[in-house]
Image (cartoon, rainbow, N blue to C red; front, side):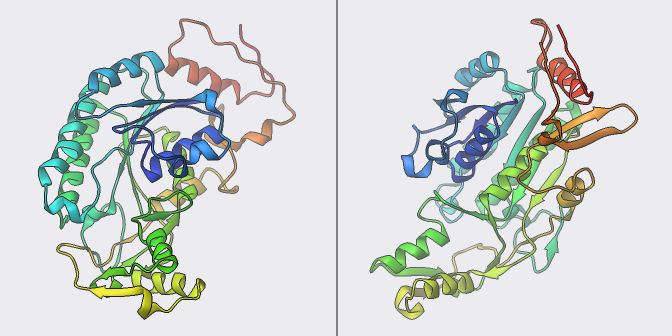
Length: 357
């Protein structure tokens, strides 16, 4: 069982990741700059997750780093996953200083808080494909950075800062850039729930630029599974795209939803001019992540996995149910560090029978 500190847990992706971790038996300490969101937007509250493994604290990374440091030293997480960010791309043009404060300065202070913490196995920076700007073709993780909005510029700055800390002092960070996510409990301003609301009400849906921009959409459960797998990968300093290979224009997506609900497109939708700096398309190539996972495991995406070392085989991955008929008992010495105790567990799971005292 891992211990995860999840920053930005009120976000759609953050709350779903908390639910995913709890469903898979991990301990979660979640923080957000505001109090917990409404029940409907918190999957970890309505997915029958184990409440005894979950703790929430209101922490603003711009102001409460002292409190966060206390949480780190008392909870001692193995993994820190950072969903906290100032998003809302269009609004970043109006008050860019707010985006700089959260996405750059707060990240700087966060690294300084964590860089000397000896229990950290991996820090995941959940970033964005907006850093690439508009792309007319598939791009992999080595693509040129070309931000086109104040929001994207601040995300580039935060990512580059973390990369420097990895390269110079070995800070164990990986970066994830996911396609457009969707799923139950998503905030109502996002395109899929917003389209549904427009169909169910008399308020028209405004489509910037006629909805001609193209995106890939991926279910949040797939993103959560990939993120947890990246946490458990032994190396760091990598960027991973999490995406499908299917792309659709926003207009075609909206048309599909409107048709499914039996409404008329022209009645529901209002076509308006494009907003400044909006990327027309970004197509993410997720081959790197797919190959890395499939190279060590060919099972289903929902299987609970154990990543371990075995003599003569190196690092391997097995599904947890491979040990269904085994008797496994582990006791951890009180003074063993979290890093060493995790190594003991991984070694023990590579044997048929084991006991430790």
